[in-house]
Image (cartoon, rainbow, N blue to C red; front, side, top):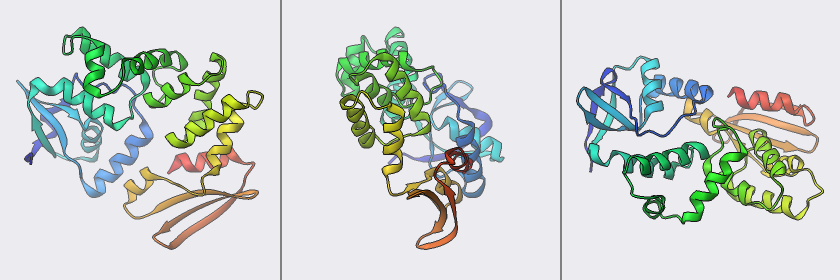
Length: 266
């Protein structure tokens, strides 16, 4: 088992092998509050350089810890020569990079001869070569800071609809994010019903789930679970601790802007 050591935050910096470029201020704020209350629960993965350490996994935790006023954070130290491959494996498994972040990082690793070819990268990740080229095409669907996971945009790219409709799907997913199984069903319906607006299909699937839990909110408080669900003509918005409901409010379903604002404020 790898040993956890505590290292001063002043000796840590983000690794040049960290592919993440998009910064989410809301997630950062929630993470700062969580660390301020509970500390850093998951060690950072780092490797040693001449003047300190570079962070392979945990740069967001490091930034939040510094803002929360921590002087040291828990870390696991790995060998520096394995840093690029470890970083690629970790961030690929987390599935939270945008398509551009992942494509640019793969191409950079090939350019720096960490891997001899794109084919070798795909073999290392256990995916097909066509997967990578699908992602590269998917980069046309949105800007670098679209925030959508790479696999999500790859699914949209494979959908048999015209390019303009694909762009509309990506934009709509910003308002109606769906887990991968539901997104797959929604995209299939968009293909089968070309006369229906894709935004309407995604909205219907978005509200089809009987409950939606705010994972970031749970992480921040460690206690409360926020639930958002549609009941006929109203949207029920509540917080609960186990089976006990702490507060509850109903909002007319047509006031979607109010609902989204409340959800984003958590």
